[in-house]
Amino acid sequence: MSFWKRNKNENGLRTIKTARDEESINLAAINGFMPLLKKVELSDKIRSKYAVFQNKKTGEIEVGYDFRGYDRDGNSDYEVVIDWTFYYPHCFKSPFAAYLIPRDIMTGEKVFLEDLIEDLIGADWNQGDTFRLESCEAVWTGKTLEIQYDPAKDRSSLIG
Amino acid sequence: MKFNPITKELFTDSGQFIKRLFCPYKVYWENLLLNKENPATRFCSHCNHQIIDTAMISDTELLEVLRKDSETCLKVDLNQNNLKIILNVILEKK
Image 1 (cartoon, each protein chain N blue to C red):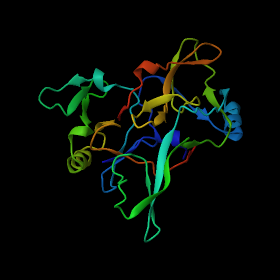
Image 2: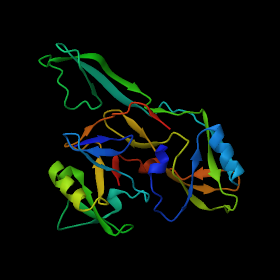
Image 3: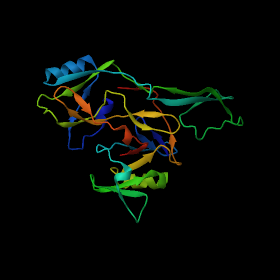
Image 4: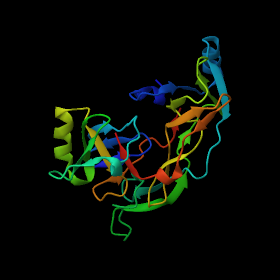
């Protein structure tokens, strides 16, 4: 099961699904949807960090993602073998994807994109990490989806 | 407690799974109604129930609340003192 299918649609807006490979895009088209193709463009603004600590005696490692809680005074059995490094934490199977637009969608209709193709920041952390927005509302203009993303509302608190 | 902001999964400090967060209404904590009797909770008018601020509750208490009602909503702030960020899956493949 893909990641987006784990989420339940409980709001009042019509949900627009995303297909992330050629086969599923074509399957949707055969079933009456109009695939709205988008490039999967990775944003360098989305980033997570990690560091790897290794036990000097046993060789076991521990991976850290949070500056808090890691001893750096040298008294620990663990030493830093990979220092804090930022990376892009997602991997998409195709460089393109498509929002699956129902044929009866009305111009101006507000919908819910449950698996955003675009890389938008959904949360940020004061340790430098920024996390990808998973879903967002959008308005169908008649030709494309206008994502209703407001950066001013980005915040680190998550509710659910 | 521990939180994976990519999968939005919340765990106890000992690694016991608590809940995966997902809010389809995109509510903001600041917009929820205050509970004067219990500042650790706020009221969500969309779902008609309380949302618990995990910064103000212990792992044990949280597990007990979720055991009684698995649909209980939670609020997590990445900067809260009782939270450690984890990313168990480095590359999440969609």
